[in-house]
Image (cartoon, rainbow, N blue to C red; front, side, top):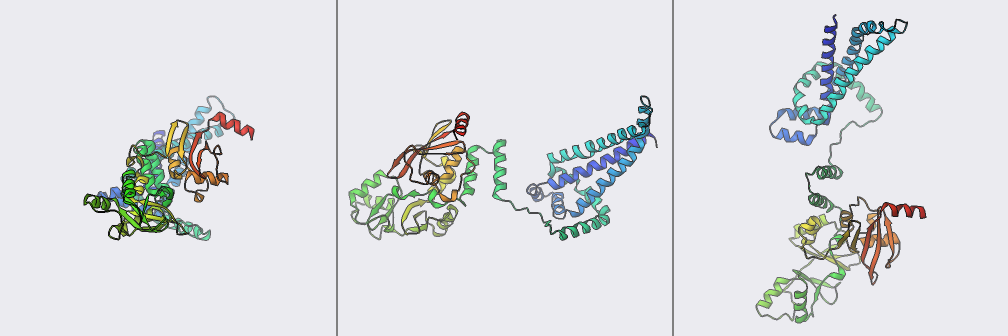
Length: 440
């Protein structure tokens, strides 16, 4: 054959190998979610791609048969076609015994390079750009190719399956989507600018409802405002005016003797009707939902939905009240700044780019969001920043006690009756870290 004919044959072989490489990567990399969207939109080829992915053994066997056959044939034809021309070229400069070897090496290198570049590297990179679009485009011709190679592919797959069983290798593909997968997609969307930072945190908070316990969002025991059965009318009026709550716990004598709760609007109705408030009775006191402090926020949402309640008292294993929580508290946990009033007390106050004043009762999840910390140590042992300090120090903290974790220094600023009120969190600069390492 002439040089032109050899070049045409090599080009055809390279094109065939390139098509198979392009198809292999496209079908393997095509995402099921996007293919399902195309299938639901009426593209039958997308459904065929999905079906092929479910039973991909025949395709991969056929693809490997084609790729290897083309590569071997291309090597044989290419080496024989180009070696004489390289030999003539080499003999212009060198006529020794190594001329044949040099011409063979040059011919082999050229053919191999052409196959690597045009039949392997470039098609695979193109397939990674838009795998779903390419997979849908090539599905019909590749199915014809699979049918042609099916007899030999069946034999190869039978041997492969036998070896897999022999070595107990599970070949079932796991397509379950985990929270880590969704989180990775959200991170990619945030980096690409598709999701704003606030929207990213909102979606993260929704998924965290399954992990966050009720105490991370409740109003703690010492901040609960309650009425007693013997509460005076003046005291009731004062609490209504001082605390803008819609619901108040009613207790017999102390907070652990909870009877129920009263809605502020019921009291206001009595005031508007000029009725006495001297006695809280069963007409105004409602049954209160009591929940254990071990519930997650997700479980509490289900409890609110089933009971039609929006307010609950939280008790611990010793039947002591540890706080109260409302549906609004959960919404604030999820939506953060979107629903928190502007004049509300801030638990995290940013002083500058490297320091924060943070309340000890701040939930550890909110702290991690504010400081952009991916992971805290042993989070099963505490729920707030104060709990983190006590866990790390192994004692009741005092002012000036400090803990260094990662790139931050947590220093106790104010303690009130063993309760950590406020901490100063400082980002450690490189110079500070270097000095501490040297001192250690």
